[in-house]
Image (cartoon, rainbow over all chains, first blue to last red; front, side, top):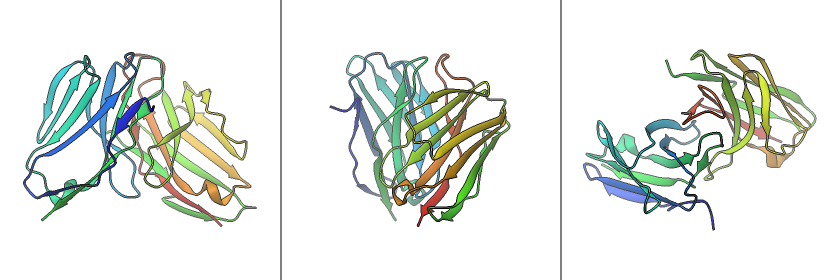
Length: 110
Length: 115
């Protein structure tokens, strides 16, 4: 079993819809959680960063962490074709390297 | 400024060539990383430098040789690579390594093809 599980997709939604992404993890030592967006053949771009359970909002993006269930989510409101990319969750514990999920490919159709 | 700059963006090399990848950041970060990413896979950690010293080598073959000339620069020297080494090579940096809750910022990567 992988430490971090993420559905590879693709997840196809119409423009304007809410995109819902999630990751589950097994390591209860993970303390901080990140979401990256990666366009094809480009480096990952940090979207959201959080280290506590609950919600964190930044513009159209909301990150949600439930440590008791070992489950994190990213919601993208009012999705745009430019949101089409692969979304990677990443998590870690202090002093240790990041562990990435496998990434979910998202397609937002005009 | 949260920019990590990598050069070149694309590189094609033969198995007998020697080439170098370069990475630069001016965020004052003290930790720098090399990752390798194959298509449709997540990044895999190769090396970590902390305060210009090699902290982690994830059992990477010696044909990959990292170098950290100063706190802003990171190089990856390539020699006698194999076709299976073709991948996107990513540089990243963070405030520090081994401390609390680091945020990693990635460069755009070098797309390497080994013929």
